[in-house]
Length: 76
Image (cartoon, rainbow, N blue to C red; front, side, top):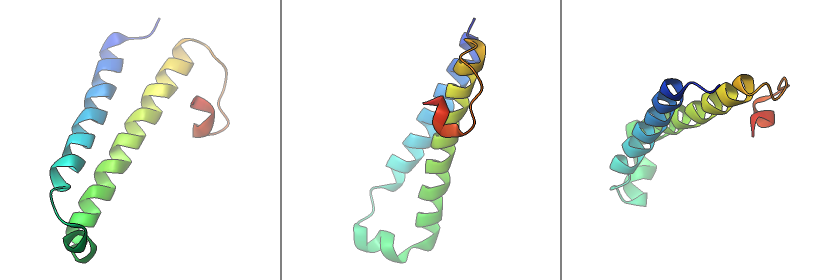
């Protein structure tokens, strides 16, 4: 059975990461292009959101005994 606490934590992580990206998107494209710290921040938070989705999918696949994944792509 899927652990709702784990699911909730993973969803929360994804939502927080996406919120951080949105908070940083108030900059113009021109500002974004020249601000390496802003670019790094957006990349980091996107990576955290993606990893949260992978972790969430892995938990569900494992818990539901849907088989072994040979790559993260197989989770989806």
